[in-house]
Length: 208
Image (cartoon, rainbow, N blue to C red; front, side, top):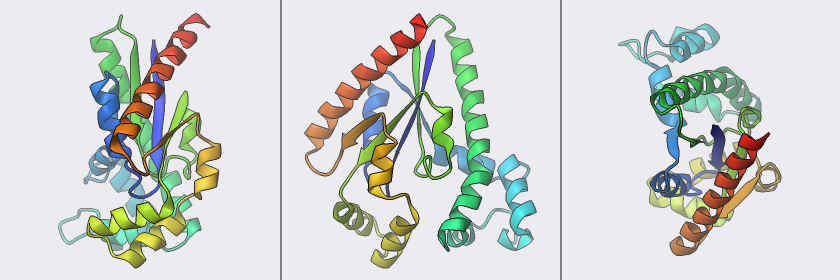
């Protein structure tokens, strides 16, 4: 039996930190950005879908997707962001399903929790494809400061956050919330507690 878990959060909320802990606890973790990188390569479904939608002007001279151009489109306004998400996220989930099936076939008798990390999962409506949703929550001020420390321009960070779902909306859609605003040890403890709850969810699913 498997449990499909979507993990999301706002810009610089610390999703990767939580995912690493879940992976160490035994979850199979998948980064949606890695899947997108694959889908954007020439000949892949994401590449073809983007060219059909936006034209060949989004390509570099060697035929690759120009990521800065796509980012500029995605963060131009809310409608463009939703359009891009609706185009790409179903393809991401299809690839996730393929990876999950392959992993399950390797260990057919083993119960597994699969965790997919994706920033815009809720904005795209993709949460409906998962059994449970984890939201990594951080106060907006901390998000901005973390993004700036990572090298992002402050105005760009603020603009990206404005295009994402609000903190309040995101929290309403969560099955589990992990606070990552401060003490890393506290975040680790909360992640362990969520993992224990996910394992119970998996056992309940087996009994249905």
